[in-house]
Length: 217
Image 1 (cartoon, rainbow, N blue to C red):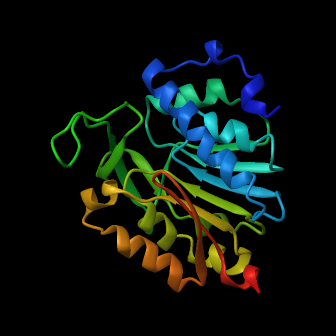
Image 2 (image 1 turned 180 degrees about the vertical axis):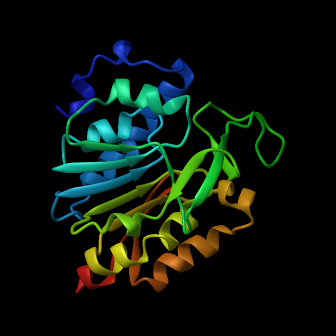
């Protein structure tokens, strides 16, 4: 039995619709962890902490989990749902440069359609929430980077170049029309990861898994 199957889902705080989507997306994470590509489970980075379901699950598999959630609404809910002591929580966005942003939960997507749930929070320049670069943490170990940050995935990767180069983690990114909101194409995200020396290793709906090219040798 996996950890998620043993949880009392009725005790989690947060919007029920958002919780439903978190639970569904958890299947993607479970697929990644079962893939056999993550050889060591010392340290994981997860951005888009939302209601805390992903960092909570990762905390059962990794020695330490670093999670990022900029939303002042979602962050305290994440803390309540995922109080595990091996989770390090940042109320911050991950990006390629330091600055301040404003989390905006838009009710409309790029195409004018209603957004499915409140967790689809984008960030805009300005505001009072800091943007951090993953490289600034100087992580000595990183075995997994898992990004679901509504279009900012490329920026987060650009701020993690040293970490990726030295630690060679498995990378999972949500790649869909969300990146077009900030003027980035889906191919740009994939091509950037390929140039880092990675191969595509699987797709779970909008989540793409990439593994270091040398791992296949």
